[in-house]
Amino acid sequence: SIPLGFFGGIGRASRQGILVKGGNYLEALNDVKQIVFDKTGTLTKGEFVVSKIKPYNGHSKDELLTKAAYAESHSTHPIAKSIIEACEYKIDNNKIEDYQEFSGRGIKAVIDGQEVLVGNNKLMDQEQIDYQEVTEEATEATIVYIAIDNVYAGYITIADHLKDDSLKAIKALKQAGIREITMFTGDRENVARKIAKRLGLDNYYAELLPAQKVEKVEELLKKQDKKDKLIFVGDGINDAPVLARSDIGVAMGGLGSDAAIEAADVVLMTDEPSKLVTAINTAHKTRQIIW
Ligand code: ADP
Ligand code: MG
Image: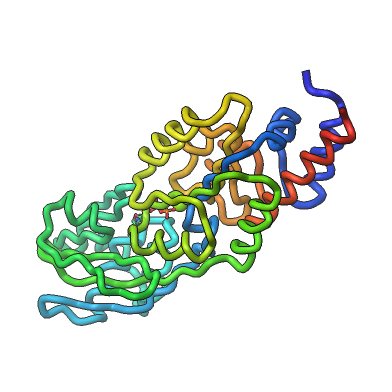
């Protein structure tokens, strides 16, 4: 049974914008040795902005962006929002005849009788599009490829930025005794490597589909000592299964989806990674008071 004192700890945490869904999770926070962060919306702001439009095969920039915006118009993914925002025209929903979203890959939609694909290399490979993979981009931009009627039509680059307190949070977590800090992302290897280096992460896994994030967490759980605990932190876009599978699932409460907040054991209301440090410190204090 959970000592009554944990309720005091839960109250202390909630006053700092940290919702802990039970004394057992507050207690478990004391034994965390490993933290896995999702990238987009967790370590980065998840506020994407279109930074470049590169058409191929005779398309104009305007046409490429507009087609992409139509295809994305039903998606709530941050990438979709940025493409729709960059498009100057109002989207006429009657033109969208068919729509399919592949999580961790992108969109297939029929617009004005044309099949439009908008997504990453995995989507292009899945649909057997003959395209040129973009590797020369020096920035950390996410590359979104577009194909129209099975012919490669160009790409759009989308920039995201680290949250202001991500670096501070990683340093403080290390100081608080976390042994291994890892990042998961569905984004490209290039982007992941740069971010991992800048933040001083111990490890990262890129180009993971949502189901592969669950498999990876299971692998990490198998390797860890019985008494140790693993945290997964995500914004919840496609993250609910991995949040549920971790010892402690932590969701970003502001940006996060309802499904993630539901699946999480701890919710950070202000979306700041450094709140995780506060949560762990609160757990330590609570244990000292109780035992
Ligand atoms: P992360 O793991 O970084 O949180 P996601 O799993 O949500 O990212 O998505 C992984 C990748 O899948 C994105 O980087 C993007 O390449 C592609 N993707 C997902 N949804 C879309 C979409 N609506 N439009 C275009 N690309 C998408
Ligand atoms: Mg995500």
